[in-house]
Each structure stands twice: as C-alpha cells, then as structure tokens.
Amino acid sequence: MRDTFLPFSPPSIGEEEIAEVVDSLRSGWITTGPKTKRFEQEFAQYIGAPGALALSSCTAALHTALVVQGIGPGDEVITTPMTFTATVAVIEHVGARPVLVDVEPDTMNIDPELVRAAVTERTRAVIAVHYGGHPCEMDLLHAICDEHGLVLIEDAAHAIPARYKGRLIGSGDNPVAFSFYATKNLTTAEGGMLTGSPELIEKGGVVSLHGMDRDAWKRNDKSGSWRYDIVTPGYKYNMTDIQAGMGLAQLKKIEGMHGRRKEIVALYREALSKLDTFDLPVEREECESAWHLFPIRIREGALSITRDKMIEKLREQNVGTSVHFIPVHTFTYYVKKYGYKNSDYPVAYREAERLISLPLHPGLSDEDVSDVVVAVSGSVR
Image (cartoon, rainbow, N blue to C red; front, side, top):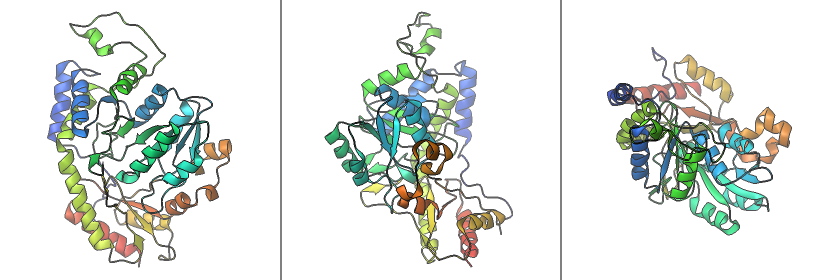
C-alpha cells in the first residue's frame, strides 16, 4: 500500500504560473486587464476559434450563451442527465425548461437520435456535453440543429484539447463553454471561456460585465473614459488578470500535459484490460479525447462488493477516486419539479451506478499509476 494519499486530480502548477501571478500583482492590474485580453486572443488562436471571451467560470459561459441567444421562459433546451448540475442549472436560470435525453452506452455522450425525437415547437437550443473529454457526434448534432433552427451550445468543460475529425473543439461559430476549474486540463484556479462568432463574443462581453457598453477596465486606463452606458441588466462574470496570467502559462503547456495524459491512459489500458472486471473508456476513430477523465465501469456481477465499497477500499489504500456523474435527473429539485424517473434515462442511470473515475493528471508518475493498478486489482479479489 502507498505511504501517502494519491489525490484524484490536483492542479498541475509550476514556477511559470507562479511567476505570471506575481507579475500581475506587481503590475497594478489584478482584475480584468491586458493579460485577460491577451489570454482571450491566445486561447482563440490556439483553438482556431473566431473569438473568445474569458469569464469567471464555465457556468458563466453557458449562462451568457443562453442569455445572448434570447432563450427564456416558455423555451425548451435539450441536454443530457450525464453531466454536472451546472449544465442544467443555467437553463433554469434563464427560465427555460430543461429537456433531458439519454446517452450513448459507449461514450456516455448525448444520443443524437434521442435529441431528434425530443425536438418540439418550443425547443430553442441543445447543450451537448463532451463527457470526460470525448467529443459528441458533432456532425449529426449540427445537422439536427440546422434542420430545426436550433442553437447548438457545447459544454466543453472537459474538452480541451479534444478534437473531432481533426478540428479542436471550440473552433466553430457556435457557442462553446470551457472550464478552467482547479481539476481541469487547463486551470486558472476558477474561470472559464466562451468561444464562438465575433457577434456572440461582442454581445457576451456586454452581458457578462454589468451590461456596460465598453470594457470596464479601460475606464481606468490612460486612454479610457469615466463615462459608460448600461444597455442591459448584465452580470458580473469577468475573469481577473491574476487568473489570466495562470491561463497564459498553462496554455503554453497544454500539449505537453495532454501528451502525458495519453501516456497514463495507455498504461491504465495495458494493465486493466487484463482484468475481466471492468469496461474501459472508449475513443472513437474520428475523435481524439482530451482525457480529462478515465472512468472505469464495473461489469455486472463481476464483484462481490458494491461500487461504493470499492471506492472505500481504494481510499483505504491511499488512492483517491471520484464518480462522474450523479445523473441530474436523480436530484431532489428536478424530481420534485419535473417528476424525472430513473426509468426515463435507463442508460445514464445504469452506467452511473457502476462508474469509478481513476486518478488522471499530468503529475502522476509511472509508479503512481502502478500503485493505482495494484490497488484496483487488489480490490476485486
């Protein structure tokens, strides 16, 4: 057994990030300023996006996208139950109705054919979540949305730097929301990014900063003006230069960190495929996963203990794990409001009940991976 606890997914922070934060503190710009603008530009350039808007979270990016599209009461937004609660909560925030549809059994991404079947005259948008960093079937989802005049919003919280048919997720005109939370593949401690068309980004910039008609930070610059107008009752979703400094440093490392994630995935695959106990995550031919997660699924009847007991046994052996996700339709609020039942989403519920996410981050050594494999193998005996 390991002598020390192995965290599930700590941030990968080095001297470069520390230097950028210190530089921001010394510069006098600690809130939204020039580094935030540079981070937006460099992120958009890396992704190949038409534009990018740095925000306080992925949740803020999703909410901003819905607001800019004018989605509100009386509208329906289709999404997946296999996601973090924020994806569905933002639909509630704008007063629309979330319409959940089940997922594909292999990728656990939203099932496009069920999306097609769920479209009604009230449907305004689809939020597709790239589960674990594996891209959804984007061509089919775009076709469905184009056919019905719907907005396709991508929740890419897990999906940097995922690719679909060779293109990085976020390189299109439609709204795409990224997360830079502490556990994510690229972190700014807290933070997010919205990518999309120049028009989307321009309107999003107004909505996300009090509804001001100009960048607030310019009011305090030599070239700025104290005058401003409020054109809509906006929100307070801006990113700070302290966060953006971290992001700039992380962006330079993203390909290297992704490469290490792929090496760890290969080690897990080689070792765990020898067991007949688990289903391992897939990667479809036309996709390159960001490998934010490595979720294994316990095969039915393969263990004499429950999934929850296995998690406890791994913790006792100093290996941290997690579960992604508790399906949204099982939470009290949604059960009471919409009457969701497990039988409505049999695939999502079945897969969630047998999921365990193993540690996966660039800081893992080969020895760490070996420790995880030994612990997992031991827990099945």
